[in-house]
Length: 294
Image (tube, rainbow, N blue to C red; front, side):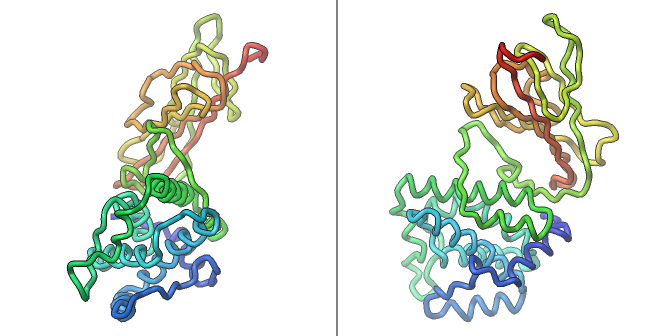
């Protein structure tokens, strides 16, 4: 299960208690469901908190994109189902898991009407058009990307900007693997450009300027955080014919990596302990044009 860090749980709770307009409790329950929700909240107050966070995301996205079609009541039912299966879950766990499940929630109707078991209350998803499904999934991706960066209450506002992210088919994120990010330790990457092709060995600085046709080894600077293993991600510039974005275990997919495309790229490392990312680091890699000196 997810082990929420105190600062992220506190930040999420504070965002709810501050009464942001984007997270107002939406009274969209049909008759008969309000009491069910109240009973669940009596058992675990994080039910209402988690629902408010995700509804806030929905409202912000709807305000920005008129075609955003996910229903508020659908979200509440998904949150209710999560709490029913996980009675002691927390606000962070619930938000993370429900947002991760968005693609499956809009794939087919799943929630039967309690008054009429032949009717699905989320039947509308069956008629969603491809652009509508894409928008919902891209908005959920954006939310989860921002959630990985949250460190305090100030960072919570990034969850409610209504953004979307259209990833290339090859790109992966930790949340795809069910790994939450709850940073507890510092970590840095050492990027060593190897000697060859007339170039001397060098260590990349934070800016990451490097020439084409170099070979780079990426390692975590010692002492590394105590963890079970390190995951690595290589993401090329969007203008590249191979944007990549795969996540691999222990080292980058190619070790060493070869610089081949001009543009701004990056490599990230994630320290994983008990299924949670407890430290992360990023190294920029900027390939220079023929008119720029190394």
